[in-house]
Length: 516
Image (cartoon, helix red, strand yellow):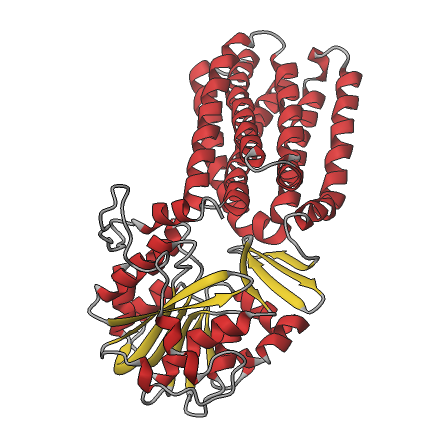
């Protein structure tokens, strides 16, 4: 009898660690789901973590009412966590695909609160049960809490380095649900003598196991059909890298690349974007031998740069190796970039652009900044005065930089704030924009230590859109897209400067794209 109690008490400590691992994984999983589907990672992680912790507080309070049948209560709590948490990602994609905007957010926040509450009930029950077995309250509390906190660290590491990159969000949820279920079934076995109708409880657990196993093997493919509804065209490639979800779609001759749900390019009109990004920049540079490309892992900027025999070296810095790998191996993207990334003049570095500029000692004749929009804290730093100062410090005295700067139509204040931030680094700027049908009207900021005169520039390579005669027209902005922005009272609005300390661009960006 004593040996059995020791075995039971030992498993209680193991169970507290295991359910803690599962709890923290669900917590960060919900944050990742919100970041991917709803956008603004900092906001979504903040909300989901806050709601999860609030739920745990509610659950801990409710646990006071659980005074009888502690083992059976714990088993069914784990059943519910396994079922709800396991199907969370699967159902989130379904809610996004089939219901109106806002339903997915309500679903995510509700399920976060519910799973948090169930998680909050777990530990008090385990502590009380350990105390019933014969372990003193002081010891049982300390040991269970130690297992809980240690499990939290393990869960976070497992999600970041193993589950999300290897299994993705749908399979990860089902697998973690199965782990919760296994804990419940082991407790059911170890404490079987205390339970009545244990066969019924085992059958309930078995049914949940079949559902979760089915989800583990088939849920992702079904969720893919849900996700297909989010995209206009058929998905031909989908993967979750260490950093983001990568989707490629194809409809007739239109190949589209999406990163975390945001359109990056369409093969139909990407030439308009990339020609304006590259050719005026090179034309404004007397000797464009050494080039730095920040972003551009799809290889299309490099494709345009390789049209110049004067270019001797291209350093491409892109954080995600998976994007570059896809650009080199996917036949559609490779045909689009013409195998540019495998040219011997190209040196690829997988590093954060900010860190690269901080650590590099190199100077460049041309710098192309082709980074995603500043829709979260990590991307915002790449649109700050500090970042553009680093760009300036790596630009040769006669060199030129070009920055993609979102849309002056859809995000007017964002575009001109980026331009104003660049000019605050004592660089001369020139503003350009072009209509890209798949994106809309898109803006760029050219920068140089010397004043820029587009009239003297010559486009000397073959292009599909850009030509000499229209260069100057790219600098003409309509009244609803120029920098003369008025406040609510009709007075001229003063543009701020985006910095690391004062990241004004993020709320501006969220507000600008709210209705698009």
